[in-house]
Image 1 (cartoon, helix red, strand yellow):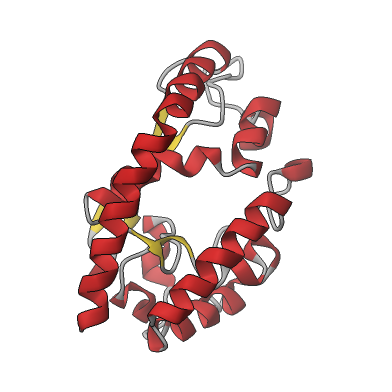
Image 2 (cartoon, rainbow, N blue to C red):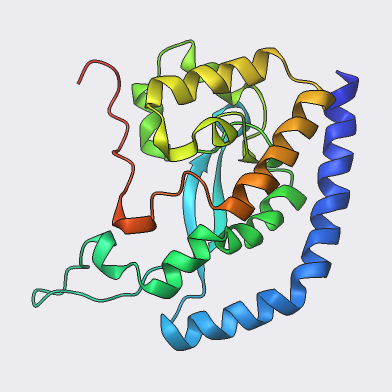
Length: 202
């Protein structure tokens, strides 16, 4: 498909430009994370990508390493600091993901890459979300993000896959900028988190 080749060119070009432009911010945020949260600076996690091929998504770290008396990490909502919450709410924690785009593992627009352990819970229809590269933002993110059900998210993902086009990508990208500025649909506010996906029969 011609548009997929064009899409990759745009992804590569704008991701490289994005890294160059944000490099001063990346340096500043890296220093602040080192001071406020410690090491490592980056958060790496396995995610299934195109055709379910596993890759490591790269983000800025947003939680500290505080542990209980038995050496076990405390709950996420406790380890998520005010600074980490700000990184999430402004989407600054996503800047390193540009590296995934440059590596060809992700796109600017596409279904968000979810946890690897969710794969076994998908229906055949839901697996179609992996027929395109996962995105930094997607149709579900501009239609509720963390405030909609898993079923609705997957519905938007499949809708995107079936209607992939330049016009749709541009619309999603512009809406994402608007929503990031307004900080809409972010669960880190008030320490609310998305419930893990366990399939539709559990």
